[in-house]
Image (cartoon, rainbow, N blue to C red; front, top):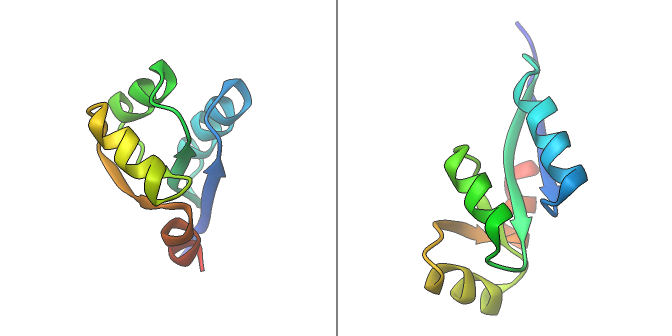
Length: 83
């Protein structure tokens, strides 16, 4: 049985998107989520791809939610999941 490697990505720009796509193709890795600071089109792309979105802090969480994004929590909560 494979031991899953849990991965969190702090930023979802050009590099973060590519890393997330690569992780999703791996059988031994689990993408827990990505961290966003701005409610831009990349956040919409992540949401459409079924990637969990986390905010950098509580204030940013509110801003992302007001922009219509589903936000799972904050960076601190994501780090707790990663163990």
